[in-house]
Length: 120
Figure 1 (cartoon, rainbow, N blue to C red):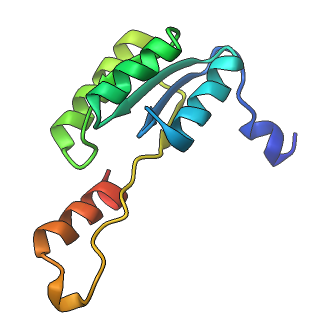
Figure 2: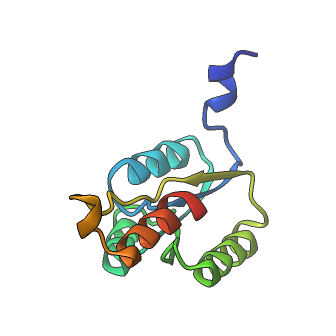
């Protein structure tokens, strides 16, 4: 079996995807659903999560800010309970972060970017 065969969505997989209410995350979720996987998505935007669920009723959904450890723990617990475990985690959530001169970047903005993009 080659690497690409290992990466192909397969029926029955239990998948959690962060940042998946829209964009790339939503496309990944759709591919897994089309392959008959059980898919749980989370996103920081609750209204976008509701729209994703309306668009695809097969999705399991939750709302979480991946920079918040407690919210991440809650989503993982919920996903495991609803799916009966997890086989795949796709940490898709990310933000662009602050731009500008180093002197103008606020520590809180920098820390939020690191927390969202790396720690999550």
